Image (tube, rainbow, N blue to C red):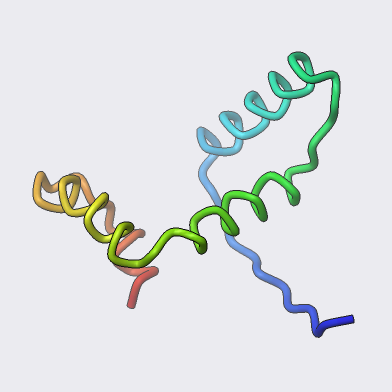
Length: 77
């Protein structure tokens, strides 16, 4: 078994409610429950499979329009 690490972060209430709502809808539609952990890990794995260049080009438009949040720029440092 590979070595495990803990990744912990806080999110605002609106994001938490949105995630819970999504997971509830997923369960209603598929009749399968997915955990918050599994959901977030899938999002991370999907993003990590995207080349960095593609990620940068996708986010340039929001950065150029000034929509980038302070939290995002802090996290990238």
